Image (cartoon, rainbow, N blue to C red):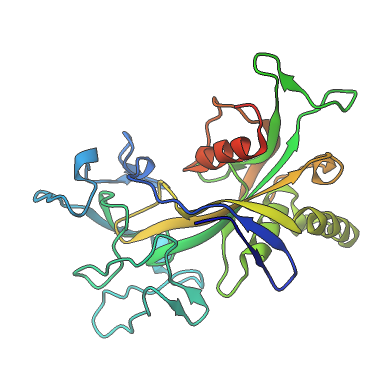
Length: 306
């Protein structure tokens, strides 16, 4: 995809850079075969050369697992469409307010009548702890600033003279890993709204802020988020992925170039986060799912140290 711009109803302008799809996935087939949030569920082993659906795997017997929290019928989850006489969703399109399209393109419906993971086998059938069959859409705001010293001068790596970039990272409540403060796109919601909402809730704790605090935060977020650069759009190598449900995201970078906007905010973890901090970007950072890839791409785009 070439560079292009899109405008939302709130006049936010985003510059789109590219769309990618990984050749394989690893975090949902890690050395620890336990499924997230339930260590009694073990993935069926899938070696690298058996990931592709085009490669025969006659002994493949994935465990069928959908979490009770999904089966209980929350508003964010689909029903079990594999049951007889169950109404079928409209796959590969917008189904009411639910976007069932994949950023990777058209996905296959398998022999059980549900979407098939476009990247390949994961060792688990069903939905795991994801709500939607097929793509589960998220949005990830990568909020950055230049690291500065006490004189407010941009700090550089002395070995390569490249400026040091920082981003807002949150610590996930479920895994304890550090991550970009993103979240799920609500049905019918514009991505631009999701990006601001999730950043505000997880990194600034807007859910518990006073009215005046919310107004100040909203004003500054609107200023920063009025323009963003798309870093990634596609499949996410997420440990929750299954053969029939998977995470996809759109990641945007919002850089506070002069450090006078969000760069001066008092970060306060909220919602699904138990910690939040400005984190130096370098090749040694360890992050949840595919987030390190998004951060690396951001650093390259801004000419920052890595």
